[in-house]
Length: 435
Image 1 (cartoon, rainbow, N blue to C red):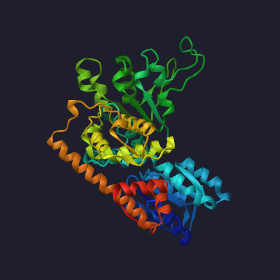
Image 2: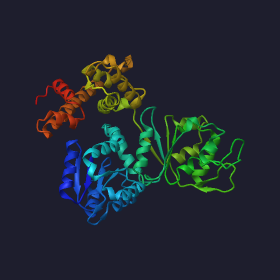
Image 3: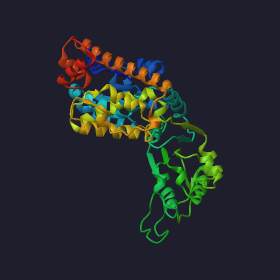
Image 4: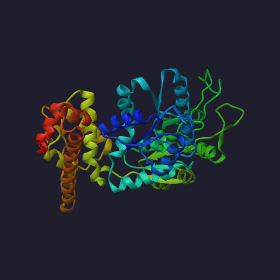
C-alpha cells in the first residue's frame, strides 16, 4: 500500500514521506487540493490511504474528504492539524476521517496511527493468490453500488472481513455497519430484533426498541448465517426488502428503510430451497451479486504470507521473539488441508508462538494432525516447492531492502522491519545474509 501525503510545506512534506518510507510505506506527494484530486483520480489503489494537512493553499482538506466520499473513494483518510484546529479535526471525523494527528506530535504518533488504520487492510493484502485477486476486483466493482451482496464460503474463510471491506469501500462508509448473527435469533424474537417494537407490544416489552434496520439506517446490515432464519422471518424480511419499508412490532405506522443488505452463508441455499428450508424468492433477492470466497487450501500462495502476518501479530501480543518457521514447518503449513480455513490458521500460529521454546516454529509446535488426505500429490508438491522458493526470496528481499535503506545500520534496519536487533541477526543468519 501507499500513503498519499498532502501538505503545502514542502520541507515538512518531505519529512513526513521520509518517516513513512523508512517504515516501508510507499508515498506520493501533493501540495494542494487540485493536485490531490488529480492524483487520487489517476493513482490511488484499493488499499491506499490519504494523509492530509487541514489547511491548504486552495482550501481545507475537509472539502477533499467530502469530495472523495461523494465520488466513491472510501479510502482511510487521516488529518494533520495544529492544537488550535482540533475542532476542525473533530468535524473531519464526523465526515468519515479515520483519525487525526497533531502536527507537533507527528514524529511519535504518525506510524502508530497509520499502522492502526492499516491492520484490516493488511490481512487482506497478504492474500496474493489469483483467486483472491479476482475476488478483490469484484469487491472493488460492487462496493460503491447499493446492490444486495451474497457472500458464499466455508466456515473461517473471512466472509465477515469481506462484508466489512465492502461497507468501508461503499458510499455508506460513514454510516452504521450493523452485524446480525442470524443463528442466534429465535423465531419468536426475530421480528422484534429486525424491526424493533413499541412499548407494550407484548409481555415484557417495557420500553421501545429500535431494531437492526433502524440502527443500520443509511448504512449496511450484514446478515451472517442467513440459512438459520425461520421461514416466517424470511417472509417478513422479503416484504421489507421489496417494499423498502417495515413496521415495528405493535406499531401503527411503517418506517422507510434505507439499508444496504449483505448476507453470508456457508450452505448451499439452492439445496436449502429444494429442502423447503429457504424461500426461493428471498434467495433471488439476495442474489443481486454473489461473491464466493475460496477455501484456503485452494489458495496455496496465501498460506505462508498469512502465517507470517499472524506470527508477527502473535509475537507482539505475547511479547515473544519468534523469527519464523523452519523448512519442515512451512511444508506442513502448505500441505495441510485447513478445514477451518484462515480462522484455523490464525489459531494454530498463535498457539505455536505461545508454546515455541526457540527462535523458529517447528512442526511439533504447530500440532497439526496430518492425514493421508493431506499427503501432497506430485502436482501439489510442485506448487509447494514454488511457494517455498517465493517465500525465501520475499524474506531475503525484505531484509536486504531494510539494510539498504538504513545504509547498513542494523538497529535502524531492525526498526524498519518491526523487530529487535537480535532478531534481525537471527534472520540474517538463517537466510545467509551478511551486512
